[in-house]
Length: 371
Ligand SMILES: [Zn+2]
Image 1 (cartoon, rainbow, N blue to C red):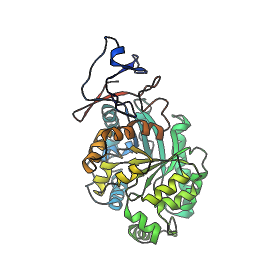
Image 2 (image 1 turned 90 degrees about the vertical axis):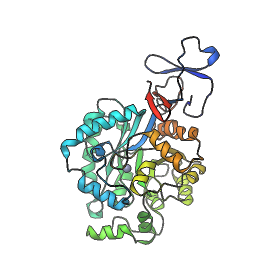
Image 3 (image 1 turned 180 degrees about the vertical axis):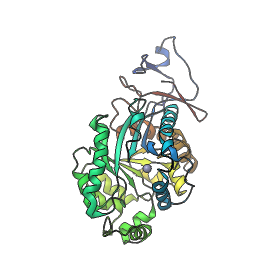
Image 4 (image 1 turned 45 degrees about the vertical axis):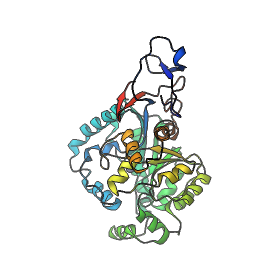
């Protein structure tokens, strides 16, 4: 049994009929009515980064194109078959349930997923994602996404909704300032340092984003390069101590981590290994991140850049590249760390008395949902 923190040999999980944890007992004290299962018993998984609304794009974009081409294709192809969107959302959510996922940090550019989320099959934190390149249009960009934010707030507790920046290169500086001042933003998520072009722009004002901004014929660039990495640039726009989920972190350095540890000690760092493999065939330096003493969590990203929405498949991908990382450690990223990142550790992420975290069996690399 893995309890969210460590492997516990010779223990028995006791739950009530609703799946609420009553106790973890020694085998000798557990009585007769004990069911033995093969493999590992784990709390339900937390998927800290998904785009459920892109589920209809499975297999649409070819692999290993690089991020700029990938994003370009998302923008141009996401509305090609609008009639396919609802059924794809429904079946992708069902797959997450079957794959042992109990809670999701989900990115929303639209309200397309609301009809499914309000059925209550999974816990969601809805990150309504803001994109806006042109600085003079910042207020306009903010207002249009604010309307979507308000739609989510009509169906969810305000604590489960944020107005969040897309990426350092796609949010103009005045738009950043509007987001930083928005009172609903207790928890933010950002696609961070996913591509080398991002670092090139922020350090030198060169690379793929320079070309993109020229193509878009912007009056002004979104963010003026200051000779520091993206994280160390936008980090200064945000309040000290902001709770954050940094997503991807492929080009994050040890110095970026030191900066973030000082300014955002409650931040979580989300790995989306399959999406990185799909888009660029390059993973973050996970052993470096692991050694830095930061809170690592896992995400699937969307079916536009993944083969499945399965946290266990993310663990398998990481194990393939970094076999030295113990599964026990990755399981804590998938459970208690993810729950802390989404601020739901009172109910999810571990087998502790009073929680209803879901119960998952992992056997021969397949997942069985027991509760
Ligand atoms: Zn993403």
